[in-house]
Image (cartoon, rainbow, N blue to C red; front, side, top):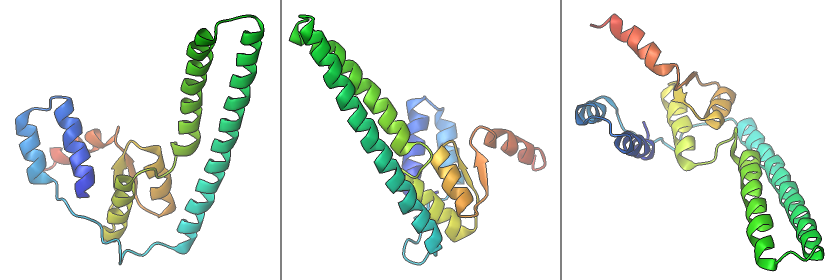
Length: 169
């Protein structure tokens, strides 16, 4: 597991008050290794697909931004025309517009793609080692499949591990 991902994992386990003995076992069982970013080969087609995907997402994000500006401006002008107080408009219209914009923008730009260095490190390390990837992240799943890596949902991973452990007990 890449060190940065391991750190996130331990922070998650600590935040949810995982017992100390499990944390000790985790430290023992999980091998931490950074991917070799210089020698791991990725087909240029994958890089091309990623750039194309990001361009489409940026254009979609720009349209979401434009729509949010127009809708907020129109709603603000209508309310001003009705005599509503400027402070009320700021609180209601702008507050709701920002919240709605963030939700739509996040979905357009981040869902289903690689959006962090730890995500990329996991894929590079799996590619380097010829390993599979276990994750709950949809972006990791999409790009693992594009890279030809085995992907297993984090939801089904514990069940699979219990099955394997039956044969080693």
